[in-house]
Length: 225
Image (cartoon, rainbow, N blue to C red; front, side):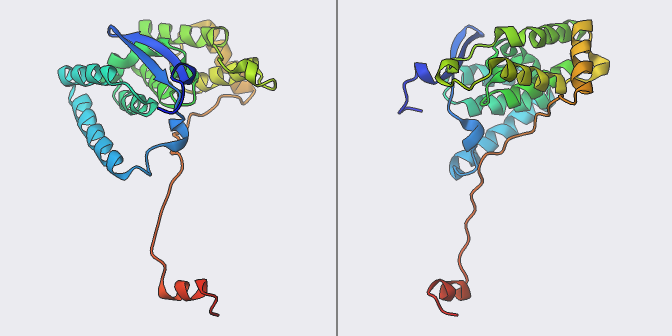
């Protein structure tokens, strides 16, 4: 990311807990973390700690962790880590992170949306009527509020189709029985009838493996039958 112009590589910008956070577009949904072994070990340790605090309801330590992250925000993948664990624990870490969903990048951008939509669905399933109503309003407003920085660079880009897919992915994260507003229920039923409720699978990125060649394979490599 350091080799790119920072302003042109932003998916969005939010002010959260008094901290202005640039949301870098760094294609973490493609590269993932599997090929950075030492960094992945450190990250796995952090995930274990965060899950423990979130499961135990240790809101004090969770708040410290979130505040520390916000001041060191550098990559989209770290947002994914926090959002995923928030989705697993919507009443603790998920509740702390809920306000960030007001930024559309967390519901539409490839680097942020997979984890953001999982948090969206978890909060809707477990949240109060007020929380669900707020989330449903975000869903309804999404197609008209999305901004596409690179729209003009791609003459074949269909903004309306892309916005519809983003909304259908959010609809796919909802349970009909938990929907509050008539408008969202109608959208959900229409998408279901058209078989356009989209899933939100976890993306793993590329995977790399290595192994030693056997003696027989080495001989074959030299052209020996």
